Image (cartoon, rainbow, N blue to C red; front, side):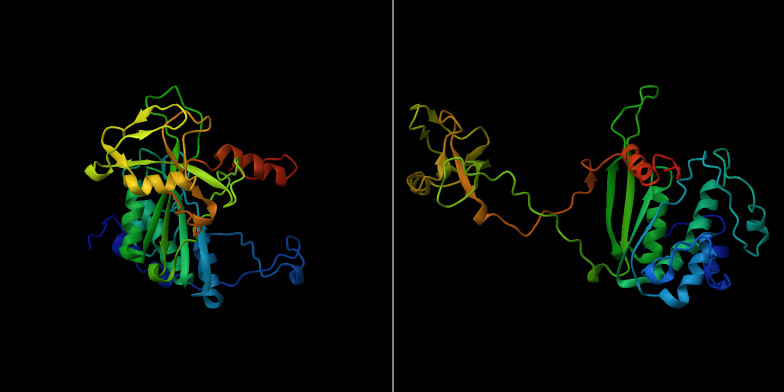
Length: 318
């Protein structure tokens, strides 16, 4: 397997092992009643020692992790602060990573590596991890995750259309982000299909067989035994399959379907043939999840929903 090389990799690859174990200090003033917290924790602090503090109790027990790391755009003002005992890395500590930093990708990868390795240890065998990212680091992150998790445990790369409005002051308006998804063991994990949309089924003619939907009666490809004229019984107009397509049934099977009131000719009865497919015949196992998220809300709407939780105040930046 191809691996990603970056400055500092050999120094930080096992850095997570040398990070001291920490204990969490309970802040009574900020804490909710422990007997009603239902095991939930909010941890404030550097995420590397925080992750290390969780290992003793939660190794192999976490089912789902979501992280939203710095996108490393060069305009975020993030600082590399890991205490790594190396002259090379010590030169990086405490300095803001800007767009003109020629090692900003190396620093970002060095920062991400120990955290990702700890998070993998926390995941259960059926656990899954979601990571939001954009074009600045998505390709390097994918290679790093392939190496840490194993490329066979890559599950999906969801593309979220997070902005509906266009930026007209630039030549290309960026409107999407990525969410990379990896499992601890892809063979032990599967996405639950989305519920089948039955709202399109109706029963305008009170058919005793129940709700139905009108499917096209033609199908792609050209098969000679499925090329024959169909006459609309209402208008007497004759139809042939569209170019490059054929009817979905043989003429004999079509005549049987027509007799069984499974062929309709549009809502008004004066168009090409369609086939009644009943809800009782539909595949209700669910719909596959699309990798393009175009129907979920935008980042702006998400910010509004968070503000509602805090009486209109923008408590969090995003």
